[in-house]
Image (cartoon, rainbow, N blue to C red; front, side, top):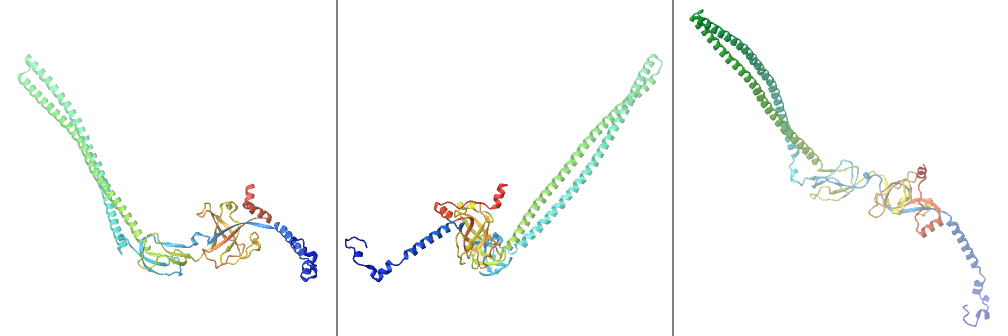
Length: 449
């Protein structure tokens, strides 16, 4: 009763005489409710001191552990036009199986006999290289012959020079003898002429001595001429040596010039052969690229460029393939504030999309439907979404992951950190503090060392 009036009904009427009044005033439900509140308070206090595992939760996707096991697209390194498909979407292909055939769209490669004709050009140029090589060898033999002939000719000229010098020497001796004879004849003539003036010699004797003097004088002049001629022969021999040397040097130089020209042509032809061989190899490889083959065993996911006769550019994606053998992994993204808490080998619980799970955050031991994993790689550079990428691999000591999981499905990850009381975790959450920073025991030990 609110007792807003002076007429108090509870004093005028006895409510306990009524059945409803007896139920209300004589039931002790307040006592049970108080006991319930007390028990709930005690349970809450005990619950606050129970252990709680701190976690870093994140969302990610199922991927593969190795890069070569992930879905990929097959490109064509050359532009072309689709001619024929050998597979369809969903087919299983082995490594090297032909997926589709393409044809050329560049006019430089339209000739179907391009490889054979390039091979013929290589053979012709190779023959030209051989011819130039033989010409070089012939010129080398010619140079060798000229060098030998030069030596012989120089020896011959030098011998002639020696002979000329010896002749000069002989003529000079003869000239001395003629000079001596002339001097003797002159003295005899003078002596005879003197005796004839004294009357001791006849005129006939004087005339004989004069004749002999004239003869010796003539021989002297003749001998002088021979000596000059011998000296001229020495000069001519020296000139001949110079002429022979210059002549053969000119011949050898010309032969060497022809040799170098032939070698230059040979090297140029060899370069052309190498260029043609390179083009020949490129043409052969390009012919092989007309058939797009599977890089590994897998399943054809999707034909990105379909139809017949459709053209495409080089490097353009044509078909997608999923490898048949792969090791599952999960890539998840964590906030930068949580990155220092992660390390390789850290334990992680994973919940996959489509697989029912009962998760008790903070109590991984009582969670069901989650699978064990461990950190195998941590990206050192932030991703486009503002978080760091972390790669998780299955934990072999835990239950194996479901075999029906497909690459690309979603996953929810919980990285397990330190065990703390529940009251501490509530206090941390209210204050917005990060989880406790700690490192594994092995790292602590290494740090102390």
